[in-house]
Image (cartoon, rainbow, N blue to C red; front, side):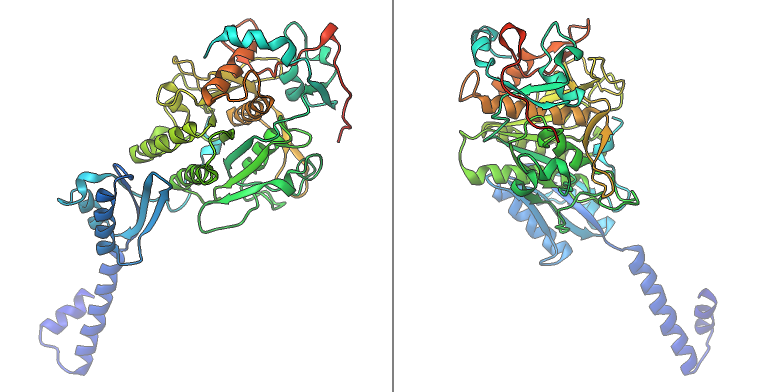
Length: 469
């Protein structure tokens, strides 16, 4: 190309030389255009609730990207979560330093395009006297179900002083089973054509869906038999929460908040925002809900805009009687710095951060632990059983703090539905109640593991055993 251009400069004449110059010029222009190709950028406002700040930012973005080329993620009552638009690197860099709107922008970051971080695979109290006074009579009415239940369910109704073997393979719980409480599962979706979902209380027929992103498929990410597309994380989480065979609280109202397989950190924030808007739409603070966030983002995988915005939405959800539950992460770290678990270090007192134990109460080796009492509670999370998202198998085993968090979410919903010790328990009170009932299965008093409070007179289990699947 340089030779051709030099020939023209040296006096080459004729139509052929002019044509050559035009071709060279067009090629050079194309290369410049490719070099300045626009990527998708994500822009977080410092305060998405203030329209006098977000309005000018949006206008500036449209000036840069073009009218109709800016997408907005927003939440009811709390305004803008973030914007997305295509910008070249220079425009994106200049945006945060812009004299008019830069001061109101928290973060400008390039959106992940491929091989994005998967947070589901991260290597991952009130007055106790009041609670004691209601335990004996209120919890005696629970009855057995799931004859020959998996040990991780038997674990939940295992009384102090008894071994799993003493429980006779039965999981005891009150037949209310979480009825009336909504559980939001923010995850990869769910594959519902499974026995755990289409028998018993029939989750398949009752589940609602909230879909994130343009891909509006409802299936989980692992429906093929070749096992090349994901691992069915959401299917397993839903199964542990409310499956007919493997579920802790079989009659909850399940809402599947599906984050698409090819997701970005913003998709997970959008999932939380979807829950927020759904809760506010019902406009009833007397209804209890649990939000399961069985994922963990190391701090270097997200940004301050994400952290601030998610905190705001979760705190407002708590005000609307929603209990947030998450896992501590599976990295075997001695400090919890990733999110949403790190909110449990003081930002959001009500959030329950679960660690995993095996069915004997021994802590899972991968638990992230923090001096600030994270995890707050432990639950079965080692080789637990759940529904599989693959078409050629009904179930599978899974390990990690996600599984423990799902178990805690189901138990929280179950206890809330009992309306014990009060019909109007707040998220903080239900967290305190979970911790009050929990007890160590081993000698380490700090490893308190979940217990549903099952008690029976004379040591005999009341009621009848339900038919096993």
